[in-house]
Image 1 (cartoon, rainbow, N blue to C red):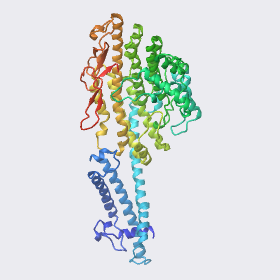
Image 2 (cartoon, one colour; image 1 turned 30 degrees about the vertical axis):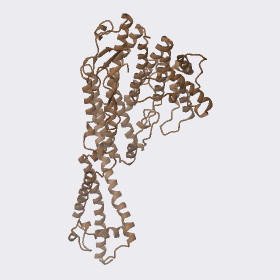
Image 3 (cartoon, rainbow, N blue to C red; image 1 turned 90 degrees about the vertical axis):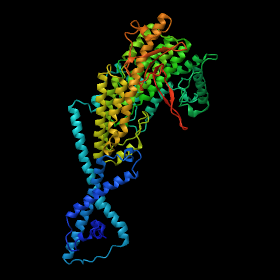
Length: 636
């Protein structure tokens, strides 16, 4: 049974003529050309109507497409499915047109008779569907993808051309800071240099033995967390030195009896019998003394530019140093606690300075994840600083140094820079995805594993849809970058609580529009942008509270007591009382019943809760109560 026979047979059905069988010409007559257009339009309307019916009945595609389940599909969704229906109808009725006219010509030439027996059932149920797919569906898909490719390319080319003309940096090479000499670059310290030199070319590559050895050298900084008691969400207090001493002892014992654990933990040295808890902890940590000394020495270099392979796609970009820096901070924080317990204030100060320098080592990296790690490490370093305040371990000169450092710490100013880097990496990833078919795989060392939905979409999307998504993401990111620049420029005059909310509102504005597949990836990526500024604002505010804590402690060292109000610190210890950026009122302060003090900002809710840093919220009807952070309190 030939394709001509299949489409002639299909042309005999009344439904093919949309129920108007009288429109069907005689067997030797010509197929009406106008019916190709009529049938294609009906196919288009039917496809769009079917989509609307599916949405109305909640019989939708992936659950991730929440907009579709809310009956808020964009008009272009119906346009796209209608276009495919039109093309499918065009192919179907075009095939019927050629098949019918071919048979009519042969009938008129008396080569065949007008009466044709129906095809065998095997041909009807097997060959007919195959012919429909080959001659109708596949060409319609190809034509639909071609049209989308042209539209997507035009949309992206127009947007990128306009942004470049406006001075925007769309190439990651223009965003990353220039290289610096190794002698001035902290990232050239031997451990990190070896880590990057041996790093695999992509996240999908098998790490070499050299890379495994480079990572293993950082094992001396690892801590036996697995042997510590688990904390609940309500208990945010740090583990005591007694707990750490027991954990080190258990790790030593298990390592000696279980060969599988010898690569998990280093060979922690055993403290002499009768040693106090702090000495036991410091003795266990001493295995890292030499390596830490080199890192802390090199952290004094003026620059920190890690040699990441920026030319790779976003999800193939490996950043192995992030996890190691986090481990270093935890190691240093425990050292500070143990040294303060031993009364070694000089050693604790050296470790604190190293911790603060390491926290700022990621400042020049143009990625959200790098800046989020930086924010987290600043909090860890502040924890060590707070321990010294509690122990009155820092001198006035040291506190002045810390106060100047906290006052100069710029977390907010890096926001547009990080967003620019994210935008450039997204552009580069999309370009590689289209040009080379680069897959989106996981990046275990950074934790930036894309969702399975994005990976599947990248495999089935046509170039046009990907280009349209690229344009949508870049436009949303550009709006976020420009909003961030405006906030930074006027940071001293604006209420950061309101501006943060407006930033989140504007950043996610596109997500509240009716759903469109041309914005699918943007819907998945943009929420992270909205949350980033809020985290940066909180970190910046907590640096201010830490600077105030330095001034309060300096007052204690000179006067023998904490001040009753912050007014007592001006002008000797503070030039002026810093403003809380969340409500543009002076920062809050009070002495506590335990003989200490707290400094706080009103936080995101804009309400002064009296320095309450954590409390339960909700939890009714058997649901677990969530924890909220009303005020941003130092110490934190």
